[in-house]
Length: 376
Image 1 (cartoon, rainbow, N blue to C red):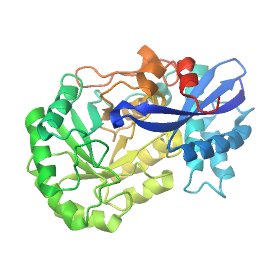
Image 2: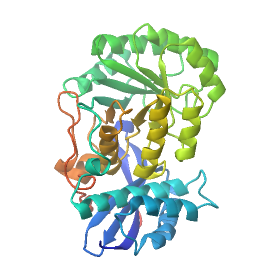
Image 3: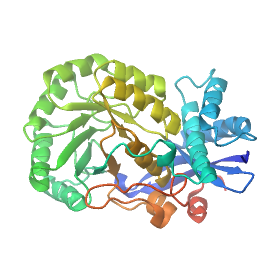
């Protein structure tokens, strides 16, 4: 097999229409082999300083990848983890590892002429539902609910809504307003649509507030509530879980497989959010998902960045028995539809298509990469 000849880190920043136009940062990785094939990866760095640090780590770790056979992805993943022992137990090295790992899987699929889904063992589902994932931003409860319903109509089975985000919705801070919004959303979506509530970092609920809000939301039927007590409060989540019936979701802010396994083992997480662009890549996602499946826990791919992580999350969700949906940004954005063009997968009739093209299955437009690149 052809060997890796180069590993390049590319920091980019772009305006995200689905986050009120906020600037978001990513670190893309481009890996080439001796035959001229290219694999693309991504780290969801979010902030400029995190991207700068990730670029340096990718450069250092990339020296250990050059000359290796890209088909041997898992062996390379283990070696990079071992190399980063001093600084990578639960830190930003996981970003660099994630981006390199995703790019290697892409390159592996292209070298073998097989899709990522094939490499992962094939589909574990007959159908993979789509969910619109957006932030509530409108001041009017009724207008916000109607907007979400319009996005869901015909292309998704429900919506995950972010509270405490940018804009004028002011959700997550007042009990009565929050409940009124969930009631309006249920009315707008109808009785069968799925609803998930995702609490942003600005929201700070006590355990008692989380119990009261969740019980009130349950009167209108919600599937899960995400991070109502932040990223790491197992004792609080145990109390919330004992006092409510709604599924509890968290985990997307974990750095690595070990962190995800810890929250799964705690018995307080019903839906583990796993971001392959943050928590050790496709290989890391697979390892954590196996632990979740053994524990009877669902997983949900946190796929809210570029077409690269989206494509990885699509294949992983199809291949993972305990993954039951995949999220969709409702508004077109530069790092998805422009970056991947018509190769970006879109749902139809509320479900996602089976990916079949080699590797990640997306063709990256390098002119778009250069347009948003920060280190030119």
